[in-house]
Image 1 (cartoon, one colour):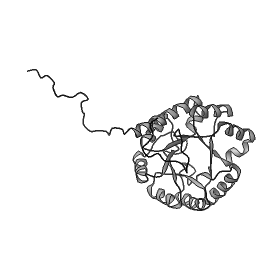
Image 2 (tube, helix red, strand yellow; image 1 turned 45 degrees about the vertical axis):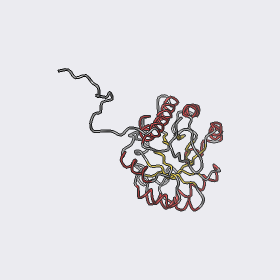
Image 3 (tube, one colour; image 1 turned 180 degrees about the vertical axis):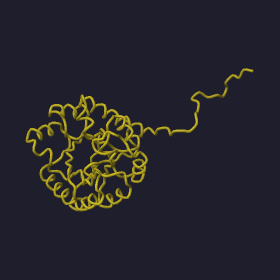
Image 4 (cartoon, one colour; image 1 turned 135 degrees about the horizontal axis):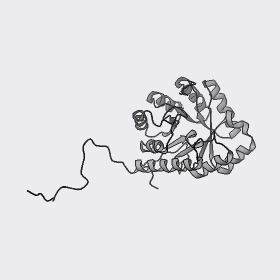
Length: 260
């Protein structure tokens, strides 16, 4: 499989497949397992608030999958709340990886940039490897990188909306502004084509949950997203043609016979 010329890693970890999956909303543990195995995803996001109550059987399932756990601070609406949740997650999951979410609006689930930066500064200083859920705003991204984040996770669209890439220009500009930072398009992807489009912009992975977990056949949808993400990654690495305003014939006209 062709790789980008300068592949980026996630705090020293490089993925063979550019897909991360969430673990919420699946109809059953068996369906969750089937979806993960079909996708080949190597990272699973888990919410301390939601998943901690599922008991040992859930953790045994995650361990059996052989995936790396990325705990998140879903449901936190302040920096203080997110920091506390991250500390608890590190102790419970025995990892310094944390997907940092500080929500600013209950309807859109848009990140709170001020709380996000505050929490990122504290957690990075404490040795966490922070994966901040953010928007495509370049100024916020710069502050997060200054805080110590080596990964950025801009949203494609509001969580669970399935709308795809709402601001393609903003995402492309963000990707180009931070060429050395690993980036994951997180949230809002509803179709495999959305994943391919994100990867064609040069992102390193996509993260999704609802589009797979709530599909009629989660395992089949997980595989479809995996294939689409890989196709987008390979297309970007292959240097896609740029769009043109005018037609250009694929068959040369030199030597063409002209009849009077």
